[in-house]
Length: 150
Image 1 (cartoon, rainbow, N blue to C red):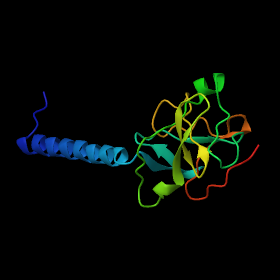
Image 2 (cartoon, helix red, strand yellow):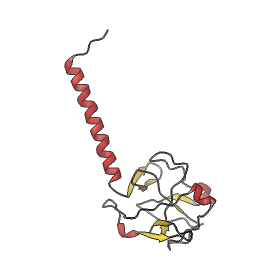
Image 3 (cartoon, one colour):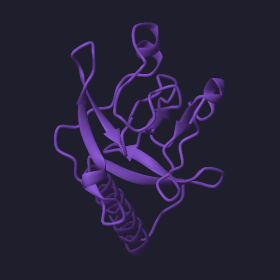
Image 4 (spheres, rainbow, N blue to C red):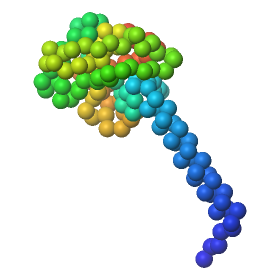
């Protein structure tokens, strides 16, 4: 039987408390904004929602006018992102986000006129499985947003 000293147990508890406090602070910071930024080694800095899920644009949408062309089966795989009140970190400009009413009556948030979507296969924050699907779906690169147009 291994006996642990009181000091070791106390140190372990303090470390565990410190780690959980750090994780809680990080979670609070991620949830502080309705649109935030994430970084990927390959993709750079891109837009995510308040819980860290990637936001995508569809190159087949009309360039920059907020109109979506993704309906029916498309919406099953690519649900629309909508946030009533946009809050962003200082590195983004909230005025670049607008709300649009889709022809199906749903509201959708657009960035620089491009409707934003989730991807149904992204199951964890930070997943980017929708990147370059069918060469028309892309994460929204926040530092150099130059949409690919199909």
